[in-house]
Length: 477
Image (cartoon, rainbow, N blue to C red; front, side, top):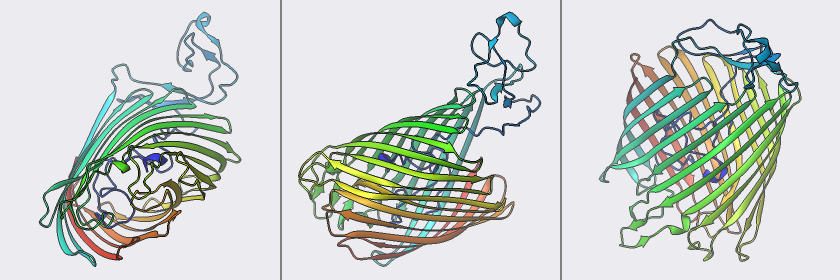
């Protein structure tokens, strides 16, 4: 979640997932702000802009600027910039190249009339869904999902603004904005080895009144606002990779209104936090990299928990070590293990500790087939209605994509989530599976169809099985 650097997922694309079926995704539109967050980077994510191979050859000058890597420069200008091999500079204005700059350097080669490029993308989808739930019965839904992204490229920088929304109409309920997300990211290549990045995200969500994550008898579901702002610095030198990251976050909720007239202010779920972390990796071979990663998160809640009667303020510490392997564009894998602890400020709450295990795999044997899988563990503060101070969450997810041809794409997905409450009896479980297809009718028009099955079990609530069938049309730039 936010405390674990999981920013809002992302971009001005189109969602195909279910709404409120409890799959643990935390959003009804997983495609909002696609690109603002990447699974291999902690928030503020902002993975370094991919660099060309060390042996890259400078392409001819075109209409857009190009960043190319040339052999290590042996001369620098007085401003500390490397001298392009074709650049003519008086010898008296040059200085020696420092020994630590032993890697190829990044050189900007814009044409004389070049100006920074700006790219605009947008998409609008209209979807209809039929849901059959064992708890709430059958219902129909209509969803309108607009989104756009604006990207500006500089010689060494990239600025990206994205925004998207999902407007839903379900049964007799009033039309609601089920989700809205916006984000601004900025990245800058300080030199050939150092990347700076910063970003801010705002995500607003409102579930349906019969969402399984809510209590029964809800007349008006709460609106949740999550805001995050952070930075990251990444440095690559020789075999050693280093990174620092930090973020502040805030979660706000409106009140929940019930059919019997009762109102819950939800102030015990409002929290302000600060998180900081770092990662150091050492390249053992051209393929394998060993790393250690540490993170500390401080949280302060607005009010005492309604079930514990004390505030859940505290600090969470996470430490992991693992290996990353990269075999070209075919296979990327990472495995890590570590420990997490949660120390509460109030002595009435006992400290919590849990083992952490993470695994991710991306396999793409051909250009038409791609398989992704992941398993992760997190230690976070528990919801105020559970009677627990902390909860250990285990999340597994997999996705398979196959491109039949230039106009037909198939996909399948499956996943599960387990939540074990520390200091209280109870466990939540959810799993899902689904499949879908996309058909491009033209360059700007496509249709999609999806099916998803979700099973949800929560403490003191009846289990729910939900089947969802969705059909949509998308118009894009």
